[in-house]
Image 1 (cartoon, each protein chain N blue to C red):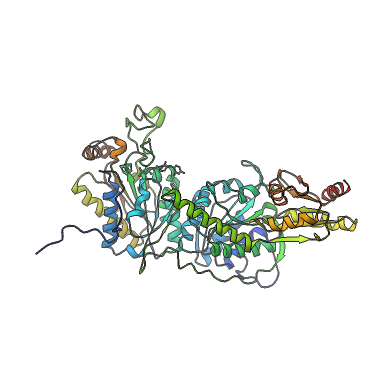
Image 2 (image 1 turned 135 degrees about the vertical axis):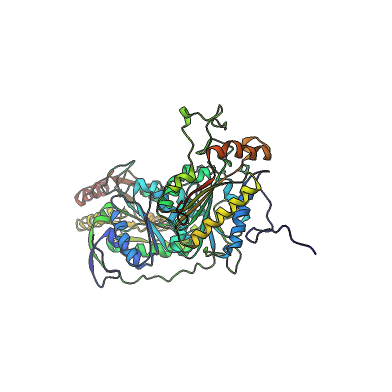
Length: 250
Length: 358
Ligand SMILES: Cc1ncc(C[n+]2csc(CCOP(=O)(O)OP(=O)(O)O)c2C)c(N)n1
Ligand code: SF4
């Protein structure tokens, strides 16, 4: 008897063309989000505020109601949605530039207000869509198109640790950092996303997952090398883990 | 702070800012998001108490970038939502207003002008006529802009702003100034006079029992963008055809027509009365919708009048629209003052006399 080994989640649009670069983790992350929406039965009650960056393509793949926010303002729009319609499941899916640079004010205050929404942030240490410039999470020493000799403190200052920052906000119910560099870590990432979603369903406050991701195109690496970099360089600075969990007293 | 009853009976004496806020509540505003700035802070103060009392949504936002985008989020679900602000802070909202026109969302924004440019000061000014009617957002877009001239109109036009925003799915602004915001006048509220607009065909509610909806400004191709812009501009043409409002006073036989908007029009009317008593053939014209602008009516008036005078509390902004409408047919003079109180009635009469004698 045949057993089904692969199924496209219901929350993924069926007739789309895949537009992310080969080896880009956006695809994996969106699939995990879709699986969690499916498993929690949220697809038909969800509204998302999309962000600007490669993450904007979320609405090309995810079969849920969406409104496109200007760069950095997704959590303000999500706040408006949730305050207007508290019974809806509301989440954002943002790049690190969107969430932690131009939108850091909106992100921090959504967390401080304890908005009962979930934010997913893709940390790929660069502005992907605009061609790989230095962003808020670019590692010290990292070469980008606007840090041609590598990020130095003198000119660029330091990268931000987003999950730790959000964990410091009192309205945050859950803040975790995960990685997609291995199958085991992808499983953990899914658990974290699901937990963040469940915390919203329980009405506990702001829930947040930072996902360490690849941008092979702008890193000028093969997909495998890019995942090695996540493990060898990024995870040393951006250490995966749960930084706040109101139910576990973390 | 005085909290009025939600629907006060009969005539009440009230400040412009409170009148706007209370009218919004009566209009059924479900969500208010705002950040303080003089001279409109009373609106947010009133809303903070009233919306909580009525169990409606209120957020004291972290910035005007956030407030206007919160309004967009709420509007994407079909909610009646608003923010209020002033001058330099409305500058911060320009990107979002461009998005909201492209996403065809019923955003309501109240702008109570203060002096500029930059931080300027908190004295009354009409220096944001261009900001309201032209705007600083990117691309081809227009707001609907309603300019009250007294406190009663602050109420009537707030009602109308919610209606027009939802009817045309276009951001709509009530443009007042510090004088109107701070001034008390006797008014009546009455009921919200417009029908509720059905938004069930487009609002985001979760894709239950239907295909998902995406509200976005991004157009994948140049052709798509052109199709959209043509549709948008057909909508603007319809709004101009149906919704233009203006007020006229003794224009029928007037040789000189004095045009002004908002609170400046009050002194203009008084000056026209005095000039008429002196036997001068002068009239007053006041656009109530400054976007769309009453081009057609001004063009008609330029066939009978010999001259126009435009007065504003700015360095000459609406005068440009009057000149475009009149299109060189008769001279259009400007008499303005950068910021501060309205131009005195006596000075206006002198100006009128000097222009008619010539
Ligand atoms: C206000 C504004 N500034 C700049 C841009 C240009 N822009 C588009 S995407 C982007 C960077 C996005 O980077 P990130 O959020 O890290 O997402 P990624 O593309 O890496 O997924 C920028 C700067 C814009 N669209 N709007
Ligand atoms: S540019 Fe980078 S983030 Fe964007 S799709 Fe390509 S690999 Fe992914």
